[in-house]
Image 1 (cartoon, rainbow, N blue to C red):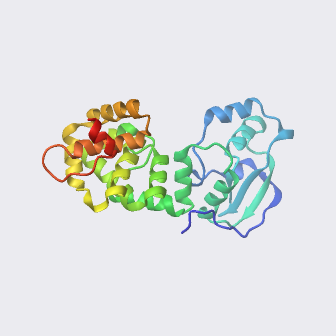
Image 2 (cartoon, rainbow, N blue to C red):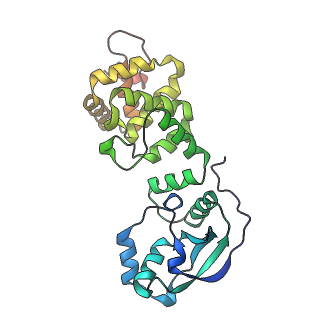
Image 3 (cartoon, rainbow, N blue to C red):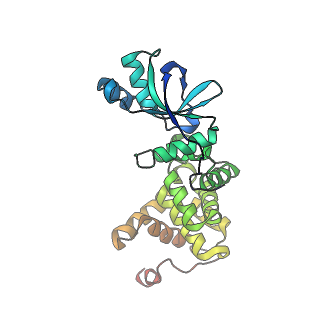
Length: 265
């Protein structure tokens, strides 16, 4: 698997397709935005309608790009009307997802929507993140109240910067200490920074235990204080705060995140 879009050696042709012969595959599309679709419908002009990109497989035309335009067209024209499309034949679901990403790489997309489509497209980074989070009993999703990890950009960024090991270890520490409310961008990145710098010198069980005893509020307050005092990045401040907590009392010790911090405290 590769995280780069695959080269799909298929060409499209222009043709007419009935709107009710099309389907939407949510695994290869971003989430439907009704407000956007309704705006398109209220401003619909059939003479200026963009071509839809569809893939013909299993007797249906799967929309790879233009699901909101299709919805607007149905409201304006009716579902039994035909519209002109770029038609591809026989792409797999994985290729459909890749085509969606290729066609939409310049459009603003929600990070979660892009992540889930990349999973369908079998991109290596997203698939490995999915494997790691599932192995830890965690879920990537949009509902933080259910303990889902919503900051998918932090996950992909941490994975690409530090690799799967530090990312996995950071998630494990957060899971075992401050749990759902701790799955925030700065905390994930900060714990990963510690593990990337100190490697096996970090006792993960000790880090989890001491963060749990200190509590999430104390970690956040100390990181906020450090940020106010230093102007450093949120991730760096969480790394410094977590090491301070780690070094309290008995157990292994790590060098302060900033050596000057030890002298100033």
